[in-house]
Length: 371
Ligand code: UD1
Ligand code: UDP
Image (cartoon, rainbow, N blue to C red; front, side, top):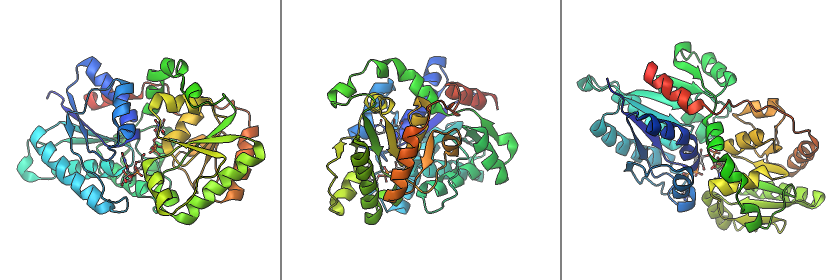
């Protein structure tokens, strides 16, 4: 049967990490269509990535917004309703989701449920999970629930590393379903490498290479809790003062809202800027003295760029970055942040990145076509 692959995404990192897959399908004339759930809707969280990565406009836009970040059920439920209607109409052969967001949970559950409906015997879409089998083993994160469920209802699991594959095997997911492909973030970085090198984001932001720290923060467990958000900023500013390193902080929209709600002032050592485009962000990341972050993708990228990373969380689903020496998980208390940052600043930047060779997108589509 001729392939018609539905690629479902909704947030900034999903667009970035699907970019090589979309590009490959287009170049090879493989049947596919894209669905944007609308989870991220601001220009700087969406449209700019399509422009910079040369991606076609989404074929379908569902415009499902969360009315409040804590209304996870409403958010996921609305997406499920809309995705179901669309899949029943468009009848893809395969559905791909990427990562651990509410968009992933909605896309995965709907696809798995459609596949059980007896009246639809001639329509049984297969579900493929890109970036499968990552585990933080922390169920207090919404992302952990999303990724565990998505993995357990998927037909094809594209694990970025051998360690991720092992996580899946430990949960008794059939070994025939799991494929180690590398992470498509490497593909995306290769796609924009030259433009990142020739960009002028540092000049525009008046930053000097190697003389500043880059901060990103958006995780629910950090920014929705006043004490934690305050404590992290305190730790970052103390580190900044001690080492005479200024901090640049592209502020995620969720975090901006919570800073306002909690009336937390941004410390004077920290320069808050709007979320950056992918090219600009990568240039700032690549030239930073150190990266302080609670993002998953930023842990990977800093590891790939050989920029030391401190993770502002109590755990990580990217333990490979810690094992190769690129990252320390510091928690959210000032002392832990300062100690980890100091260690990372003095560490030799000679680690090997564990995320593959930049051909993950092609590998994934080859498997979808073959299996
Ligand atoms: C989501 C994902 C998270 C991922 C992150 C990537 C879930 C549960 N979380 O978190 O795993 O790491 O995306 O950035 O799926 N907002 C805007 N403009 C936007 C998008 C969001 O203003 O374009 C605001 C809205 O107030 C919204 C809030 O941010 O209610 C949170 O957005 P949401 O998509 O629910 O979660 P993120 O924190 O972005
Ligand atoms: N990113 C960006 N501009 C920014 C911050 C991040 O382009 O201002 C990119 C970054 O390069 C990475 C991705 O967004 O590829 C990470 O997304 P995010 O931190 O929102 O989500 P996570 O990876 O934690 O799910």
